[in-house]
Length: 241
Image (cartoon, rainbow, N blue to C red):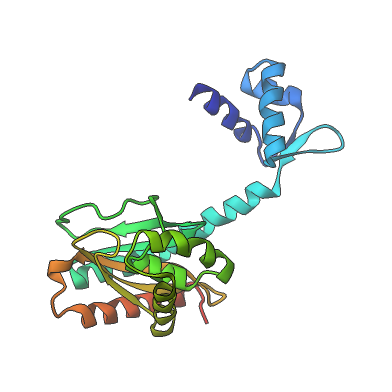
């Protein structure tokens, strides 16, 4: 852990006043031997996080700018979505989650739990393989075709779906604008999920109501209506057409 902290401290050496640094300046700011500093700097250069300039000084790369953009957009959607999520949780008296797809996983961005949750459904930052729960179905319904093809085989293995039936279900979710599942990811747990569109009109996020299946009863239509309304409001806040 100590070596990781020392390596990552390289990024703290940069400032608005000093956007480029020489190897000697790195070593002085870090208090490390020049040879040790060089190994860290060289590793980050090879990974694409640092760029060596013609004067042999180093600057941050556009790879970090791209990652910073992801963080900024995630913070924005959390800030804009939180009030709507809290309102939805109060209206349904159930837990509400906001998720996105990253690679082959669904990642939880935010959670609002009911006052006395029976269990912690999902933790913020949790990565879960995309499967056949309501949230996964909505996220998969809005993935590029090439990415969806990579996910479907694994999703079929962990479910009762065949490949054709899963693709048909994903298509229906895309058409009707929501997914509802009972025990899709966890036995005894139900979910109602709707897409949240970004400024380009793509379903980048998913808003979900999560509750024990025993509490669904005749509430399903009302849960779908409330989730759809909240998803549309958050989409509008994100600039969706």
